[in-house]
Image (cartoon, protein in one colour):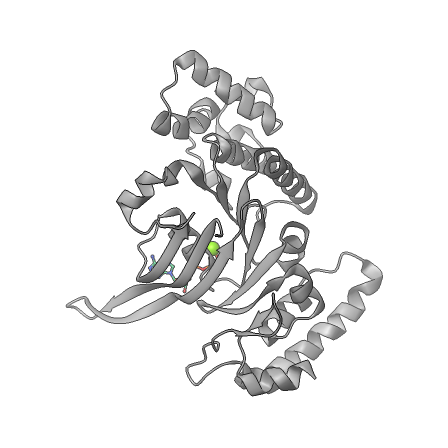
Length: 317
Ligand SMILES: Nc1ncnc2c1ncn2[C@@H]1O[C@H](COP(=O)(O)OP(=O)(O)OP(=O)(O)O)[C@@H](O)[C@H]1O
Ligand SMILES: [Mg+2]
């Protein structure tokens, strides 16, 4: 049994229009995805803006009402609120966000921010609570003086550490990390990522790691799902995705990874142009009449791709 099993998850938002404000259409933000997260792993969910990544993450923490499908945590369907309570779900699953300046309350001190989940779930005395928060600050590498400061008094990287301290306060088993480093400078990104790995090792946490950047995901994730317009277009191990990408959308995302090495930039530019040309010529093979991805087909024990069967056989030749 996996820690999390998502089956045929759909989240459709109604679009209302006209002066009667009737529902006239819907946005298929998530349109039938399946994925499993194993205990202790970091699972990557990658796609461009609007592909449905955050909607998926929010559905898993229970912040989004799902249209259909199921989300199981240790075998229990947690789309049902009372079932969620039975497995202590709200304590065991936490979320960290991209923009810590807007996700941390600006009028609250760090002590109160980090203690908030503790106050919701555990009954500690003021003294016990302070000790626990100091412990958490130490875990994330912030000084004890941080206790009485406000979010705006920290750098972006430090604020992200505060968000992480709050997320680990209740000893969660799963953290949904929605673009946790996208707003940070490259050098600070590496620090925060290493630190996320460290607390993963120490506390045995699993991550659902959401990102638009396949460069970042490569350093973090063992298994990766590529999301495009509410559907998954390719799923596999890190090696499947980086060494043998089969879907044009995955290839495009790979070509978009920024090249750090200046001497290789021109080569990457060339590659990007080639992929773009291929995309313009062949995109219709990869999508159905509605412009949506096909169902995933298995091409190896770990690798799945959304292409009609005949074309997969051609691709693999
Ligand atoms: N509450 C909502 N009501 C209507 N449409 C929504 C709502 N939330 C999201 N959407 C739409 O659902 C789609 C998926 O949005 P989502 O935020 O999940 O994408 P994302 O992959 O996280 O994008 P980004 O990388 O920009 O964060 C988008 O088309 C978005 O406009
Ligand atoms: Mg998002």
